Length: 149
Image (cartoon, rainbow, N blue to C red; front, side, top):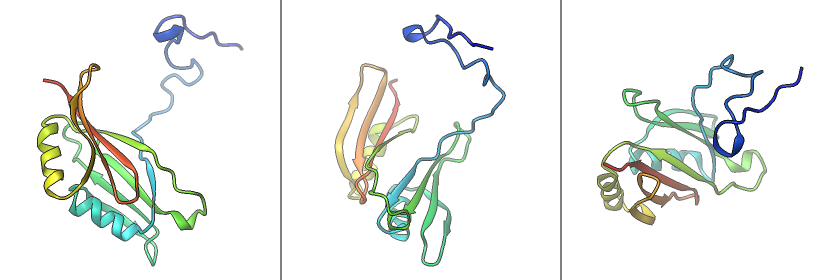
């Protein structure tokens, strides 16, 4: 059986693949950030950015997950932290976009007070978001955004 791609949507790309449809329930994405020290990274996300430690594993710690949000305004944000030396791969330096809802400028000001390295100050984007970007101690870029009023 051959499935045809739908002609609707952006660039002629239709909806979900017919053989996948809604059979599988996806419940979010949890990026994994390689870090040089799991304990230090988890502490930084907790103490500086206000995340809570969801779990930390290994002795010495080699893997952890931090969480922000309680689900009352959408799914919580989870970030996984792994000791990069445990996988032997070069660290990935990606960008994570975190939607935070309202008061982007207030969040930016709070992070500046805590000494966070801001690499892009708050700016209103033409796509309807206000956002700013920071760099965490292992070099990853976290971009925080919220909808314009």
